[in-house]
Image 1 (tube, rainbow, N blue to C red):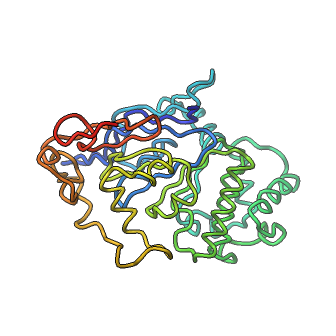
Image 2 (spheres, rainbow, N blue to C red; image 1 turned 180 degrees about the vertical axis):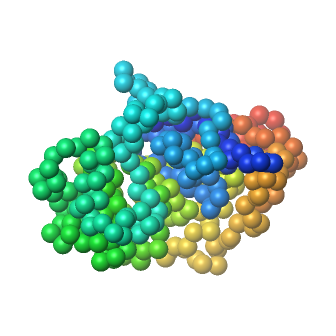
Image 3 (tube, rainbow, N blue to C red; image 1 turned 135 degrees about the vertical axis):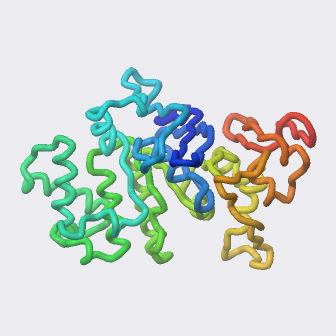
Length: 333
């Protein structure tokens, strides 16, 4: 496959005075060009920390202690993101990879009009077209995400609804024509109709512009609707990865199965829904063996003692579980 980004064996730690917390542990993940890859998991699973390594903007005192991030590795202009200098990093951020943050109301500057904020970002990245001339480009982006540009350009953030601000942020992500857009819970706190509208816009952008998207979410129902590939994370580990068709048709990891069966549906008997028992572990006191074993109904002795490796089911499906590896209770692909 043609991967626009490759995360290879990434480990991220938050080092403090007396303790070090490993928030992401040895994650290898391909991001396929032109497709939507969803990273799903409960709060605290490491989704946002992992993708922060793609933009190299992990909040202090976090740092990548192992692994590499490669952008466009197969091209002659391939970039090793973690070794970029300040100028190279500035060009890479927003120019190659942009991000739509979770809380649009917190991301936008309340003291500046929307058009001014677009232009400020473009100017920082080297655009020197006069503001009045550049407004045409800003207007095109706003219209593309189904906003009335004549109104929005001269509005302050507080004059827009939550859904409008989220669409402004999506337009922001398109400003410098990046190859990849990261979307961190893009429909949080929005009503169902607005969520549906925004996902239709994202699908249109992906289809028409061919922009690769990385979608972070805790809602596996969103994954089924919007993604081509899905990565399931738990306690900083990648537990299952594959095409959406493969993972939903044959979800192998007990955690993936638990997420799917805990998701409400209009066509599923609510009595068949089951919450995943227990809680996400404290990263300071992770269980031995498989980190999911205290909550796993399929757990056996090896799970409590040995950390499982990632097992290749086929070229588009991988799972980290002793049930599918070598040894006790092995299941061959």
